[in-house]
Image (cartoon, rainbow, N blue to C red; front, side, top):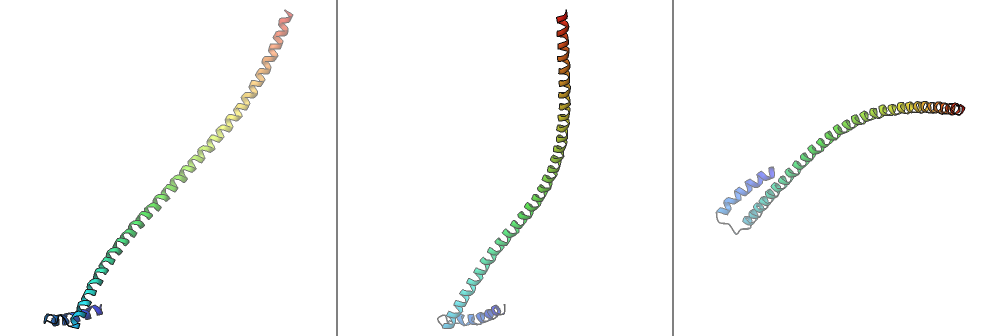
Amino acid sequence: MAIRAAFLIFSSACSSALAAGDAGSPIAKILQLLSDIQTKIITEGEAGQKAYAEYAGWCEDRSREIAFAQKTGKATIEELQASIGEKAAIIGSRTARVEELAGSLSGTEADLKAATQVREKEAKDFAVEEKEL
């Protein structure tokens, strides 16, 4: 910053010399070169600042997007874990129902087998009685 102030003082002092008609002198050429370099540096600095601002904006946007994705992902994980718990409870109750029905089925099959044996015995008894008649 001090260099820039010194340059401005020096350039203003020399610009009065230029106004006096020393356009072809070496000092005037140096001052012109310095002025051109200053303009170029300022232009490049502004372009760099603009590029930095765009990049910083992109970084902020991306950071917000990632934070939102993380928050959404965590919520989804919690929802899915709750759903898994519910489904596990349903599976447990259905498994118990299947076991209950399997037990009932085996009891029914035993009753059917016993009834079939009774019917076969009664059929034999009936056949014997019918032969006697």
